[in-house]
Length: 155
Image (cartoon, rainbow, N blue to C red; front, side):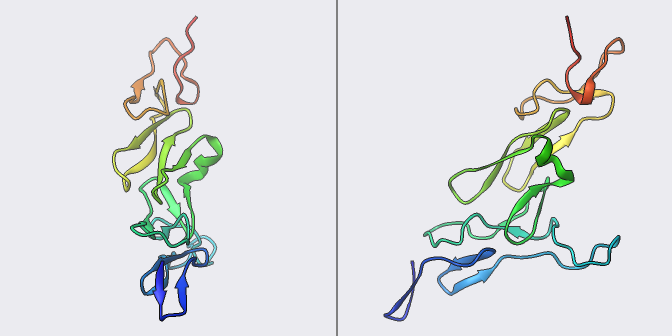
């Protein structure tokens, strides 16, 4: 815990703030406005996220938003609403979110903490397993139908 004077110890920060030895510091939020609405941007790639404001030695604090996500200074979500279709982010227990699953028709890419995304296969492609980064998109056979980028039904 960060200690301030002889009387106070920092134990937790408000949502969107990282505990440091200097106190609670805000995570990066979005700047600018949405061109369509003129309203301030709430979610963007340039903001950061943080899992907890609880002081832990060696915790990463505010994290950069991965390629396939949008952040708002507090939280992270998948781009294009993919969380509602099967994108799965998991707390690794180290203060970092890891992309572990993607919707059907998307390739899981998670080579590094910064380079995590659900990459959509082309309209004429499919993928057998959207939850395993070793699988890639393949051309759908000419005689088959590959619904939503999933494998062609055989049988």
